[in-house]
Image (cartoon, rainbow, N blue to C red; front, side, top):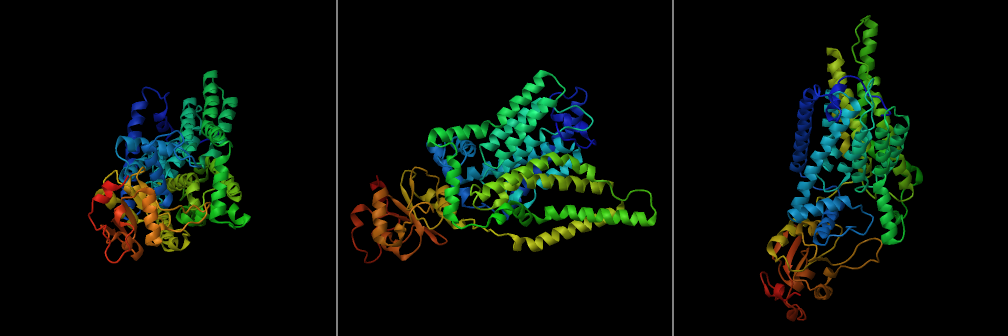
Length: 554
């Protein structure tokens, strides 16, 4: 509504509008549907490739979210975690767990589907921003394929859906050039998208504030009837409903409206008491974007250099036809969404300075800006190839190939954070789910946060017991798996019938040989209560396959 978009192809963008003409709607709706299906299929192919290459999780948070959603499905409540984590992802996954089963496989299938749905939202957003079918298609394909978008499209975390919903909301305020303002109902759709986004992640909160301000400004300036103005005003209020509801809930449930900020700050201070300096924190998010997706930021430079050289060569040769299309005007539609993304990053940077931002992988929080940048790069690249001379096209293709090679060479050296996919922890959890009775309590060794992968694969929120807390805000506690006596006491405390832990002498001395092993991890049947006091003089009496320990467990 406040930012113009280029004219080519704008009639196709009306396919999503309720006010499309009867004669024009069928002609534009069919190509739109085909493009949308193509983007969805392409995203599904990218996601399948990412899974085939072995990616499973960004961090242990992925498994933590699955465990918490399983707990919600086991015992639903309004606030799924009672912590700073927002509720919508747990409501969604937990509801699907109730429909199907509380397994890691279902959670990953949901993540796959949400990744495809996010790609569809990105394509719709691109059509609203650019008004050009081919440019939007190119941008949406690139936005679904750059590495972080590809990985988050299959990870059991809500960053990609939240960013796609945010982009959809911002795009709903974009006005096509030389035409009427978009239907006010589109802004209502954007506001509803922000409700879901702001109750999934905190990064969309600054976007919601800007969206509300822009919607109110559009309502004040719009030369339409009262109904349109009322819809825009309602959209502004709806956009802020998510943050307002969460703040109110924290005031009621915890006695402090900003309780969630205090929790985040306390955890961050516990993890890294010193932290980085103020200047480093201010630029942490922009630096993370460039470091993690260098190709996205090198591509516009390559396009600009090729355009400059092509035009310079044409000028020297006295040729009248332009060898390269003008792209500056085509980039103008991204000014408003880009300003919103910049405001979001500035707000996140200030939050980071005050310890109120994510503790790892800062690039996840900048996904809205990365998606928008990918749309712009794909859009401008498509326009450049479409309008350039044959020689300029070859030069542009070579330049982009160089950018890709540079990214492939330097990307491994730029990344700061790597993650173990917890393959063995997941495998032992699945083995325990198959080999032990569903009602049998299981004690799980906590070495680090990898035990969350085991709990997610086990899928028993009511029957799995971590042996200790390693929350940095809690006093440090030694593992009960370190010696047989401590393990016996902990088993008795929780009434465990089975044990999951690393294969080592202290566990074997208490429980004997493991029933199953996966890598360094094993599954044991806990000895019956009558045998726990006997000093270990050889293989423990709780030998593999002993069922009485399970029946004896409370």
